[in-house]
Image (tube, rainbow, N blue to C red; front, side, top):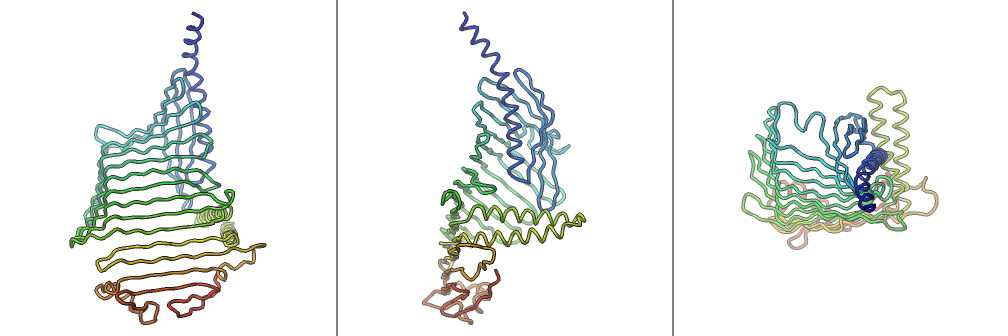
Length: 423
């Protein structure tokens, strides 16, 4: 009987303790979000904690760092306490749609967060079928709805994001845009400041563009893959991005593909890049202050510009490599292929007097079908001056460009072009 009584007591007491911990976790989450960036602020107001449930009010402030404009979204949250966690149901105070509108029919979006005693949390936004019409510009947006899910842990600086959106249509008098089967999978881990590492894939099965006064274009199998990882004891970052398109279908019946573009960044100094990011933000804030008549704005702008220059020198001093190692596009006349790579070896010692450009090295290769330039007037107008100057040379049925950069000398197909040390 004593054991049964303890179980009953625990079953009654645990939800109250869960509610108390949920309140602390939400306060902590708000502080973490507010301290990690400047564009979103979470404000928590009245919090009424009960035994089996709670209710609290809050406000989301979305802020544009460049203009200083703010969008305020007040909300009301209902909390249900369980034995090992709580379920929070959020609703905008002013509703999901403007007064008099019915975007979602008889349904409504639902935003929830499920928290656990051990610190994990899952936020989920479910959007039902919707139709939104803007009578002012005769645009309509409608879709099947979808789900966005964010999975993380309090204080862990690790987030997993997933999304599934089956269809979306944007229709206007000028053009119709149709998207089908959009999915997202992203794992992120904060490295330092505004820099995150992780791996993610964004995939779009189909995209159809139908202009009113032009031929339709259809893309099939569009995907973006990204991977970022820390190196050199978390002091540097390597990043890789790949964009692929299986098919591009034109109105004439031509189906072109596959296409791919790869981007690679190696050895980016984490401390220096965070300094660049902070300096750019300071420049935006100073520009906003200038618009509002702040007498110190000019001095702030000059300091921010100086900080940007110093942080760029820090980046160069640490060394880096950046470029597009693989470019492969398919035209009706054949493939376009190329690559662009730029490296800086870095320097030892003081970076304050470092000139960035003299130490830059790079290479570029471009190969395009000669028939593309001969059969397409727009391409011919762009390539003709380059061919005349020897920057594009003919080799068989291809137009080629091979360039190297070293010691402020750009060599294009054997033609040297000196460059000024601008940076």
